[in-house]
Length: 127
Image (cartoon, rainbow, N blue to C red; front, side, top):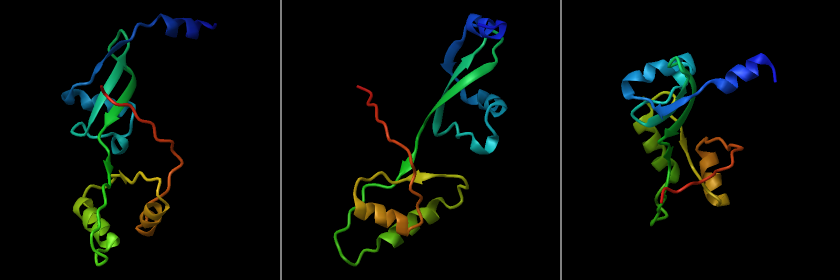
């Protein structure tokens, strides 16, 4: 192990939830335009013995469209989605998701311009 690796191994990290009024400290790690809002996220930080943030992990609220319930053939999904989209259009950079295993719902998401991602979805429940 080199001397740098030995030094890093000897640093004791302190772990805590970052306070709302300290959120601006995260801009040293993350450009402000990509930083989640403190109103919708919690940040766990690892600080070195000098109090410098050396790592951060976010727990964020994420928007997803569901459930979809249609009782009448006269209902237009695209208009429903457009209505929701217009309601948040002023929130530049906001992202929302659709989770589905249904080819029909996937097709609907594609028709309104949503992007298919290559992510796996993992789940953990607080019990």
